[in-house]
Amino acid sequence: MPVHSARSLSVARMRALFDDEHEAFRDSFSTWIDNEVVPDYMEWEDDGIAPRSMYTSAGKYGFLGMQIPERFGGGGSHDFRFNQVIAEEFSAKGIGGAGLGLTLHNDITTPYFLEFTNDEQQERWLPGIASGELITAIAMTEPGTGSDLAGVATTAIRDGDEYVVNGSKTFITNGINADLVIVAAKTDPNERHAGMSLLVVERGMEGFERGRNLDKIGMHSNDTAELFFTDVRVPAANLLGEEGSGFRSLTNNLAQERLSIAITGIASARAALGWALEYVQERQAFGARVADFQNTKFVLAEVATEVDIVQAYVDQCVLSHNRGQLSAADAAKAKYWCTDLQKRAADRCLQLFGGYGYMTEYPIARAYADARVTSIYGGTNEVMKTIIAKSLGL
Image (cartoon, rainbow, N blue to C red; front, side, top):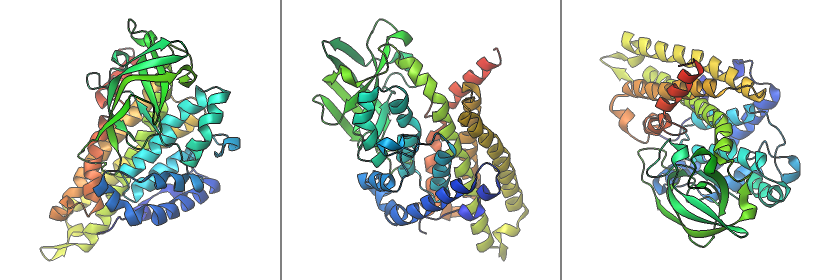
């Protein structure tokens, strides 16, 4: 079975969230996926990486850097609904790993290059980010830290006009393809939160090495790597924001990161529902359609209800984010619930496929594997519940 779209099920056009401009953007992006991604996607899954040409093609058609000012080649819009459309369409067409790389570039790393750069840095980096010539990544996680951002051991010690970076990172999305890596490091190793800064390490800097492209359960077409820094001399001109402001910068952008993950989560759950609805109406068992059994009806009715209810919350979060009012707790609620629903929906819908659901040629199988990591990255769902509890005064 080829890469398949569940877009026919999407209620996007019935939601009041989008206007004609968003729907025109959706049509263009959907066509781009069909032409530029779908034909080769399974080969990318086998290769464990999407080609750099995917990014330059997306940049050519205006699907990168929608928030980047037009003078740098971007879209000049801070309307996060365009980002939402991209995530929804990737999910509808069963594009997991490659979609993750592109949405990370748009939703998670680009804000750092917009909010914490000076004029010189913007001139140097933003045109390439918008065109796809400069692929981006962010390196926070270390082998011994996980979700404990303040506990990173990578150091960046000032030496004249340079910082000397030493340490390692792991599980870095876009780690192989990335040209610009935002590295969280301690410029003052004696401090926790106050000692962290963000530096941009560029492809080709001496002492910057990439480890293996990690072999994951899912998200195969996204390159996820170990990164190593051995006396890497990074110009002070590559410091993002002020020295010591790194932790604050990271936490300021986590709400958008978690909203982005939530959007993909609910869209993936909707896609799983669509694939299952199609399959059970075609498949025969015991002389009847699988769709005719009461269990099938109840399972799909339950998933459909959860998807539509959660979608309403996520859409409100997007509007709140556009107004600059999305709280850390509300983003955490969205991320936690949507990723748990994504896993649950993929599992329940796959069951209706029987043995075929275990075959990776079916998008439901890949969606099931891709879903497992989503409650881990972007802050584990246990951390999300801690954030929510704090907002309740607990």
